[in-house]
Length: 274
Image 1: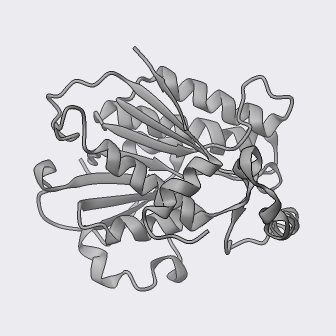
Image 2: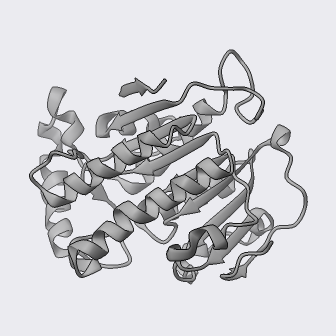
Image 3: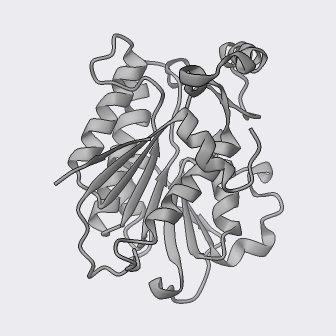
């Protein structure tokens, strides 16, 4: 894992709004964007199952389907779902506080329809969410980019991811987690032929990827979600034994970057299988 240190009501439709006053001393509140995706859906379930997560707010561009919310009835009291346009993110989240913000947004150029539309979802929306995190003094921001992310990459996809990482670091959120998984495995709502073929090959050849090649192994979406929970859980311990949610504790902004093999190791702490 590479670690770099750096010196009113929402207007969207809402469902399942939990009641009661949240106390940071008893746990943490969080916002999740991207809960309808492969990693986001798994992350939502882990957050709702975490007894320390006292309030979980999901920001979604469309309602969560029955499959995404199946079996979550008992956890509804702490779940709030806001369905709104990400173009007006600040209005949608204007009455929402968060200690941790998770961003699992992502699309493909084919699904988006153009490079411009892809940049909107994979760059502009995550940046808007990070600015919200900065505004509400969130202590941590966790985001998924991609293996090979680099602003100087010859590939448009990797270049956008690298640009996102650079812009996020400039915001100086107290603790920024950047996850760079390899090919993601899991059941998606929409089939992608290229990814299906790639997943088959990656699974078949995974045993050959050892040593320095280990980071290229395909990884399950559930494992990435588990790693995000574990990484931010470590962050909640704060510095010098202080509680991460004590807003009076000043922290030096820090960026932590996790390669795919780091993610696999972190995810194992939550009992996920490879």
